[in-house]
Length: 151
Image (cartoon, rainbow, N blue to C red; front, side, top):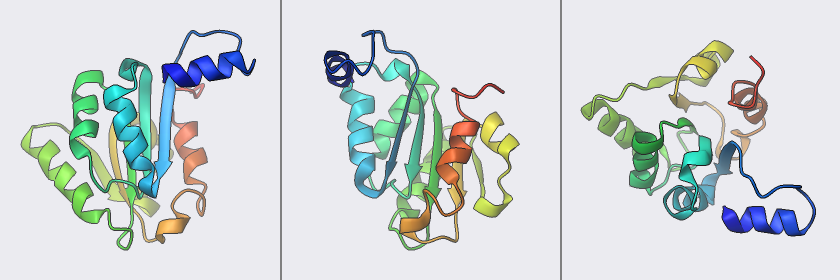
């Protein structure tokens, strides 16, 4: 994360090297970069939220470590066909076993209030793998309920 900030500063895209709130988001294989950024990115305490769009294939221990240590918000939307169902259900089972509360619902039943008031959110969708980010403006809706919103 420090490298990204240095690059953006050097390119005059930002005017400070000070890092505020970070939201990491990825689709499909993007989980891997996010998982390692949480473990070795240098500033995991700045990451406030993670959005996984049919992207929880592995590295669940890195996500659960971050959840446990840094109290961040996780939204994981998963499909039946994307290959993420098993890891998602296993993570929910682990959280239950550790006594960590989470919210899980089918996508069409999730309200904006659900997105605002829950920290660990698992959303099952009827959409296909390539539709989970935009078909229902999911990314926009998550950002509206994020740490950046002016609720």
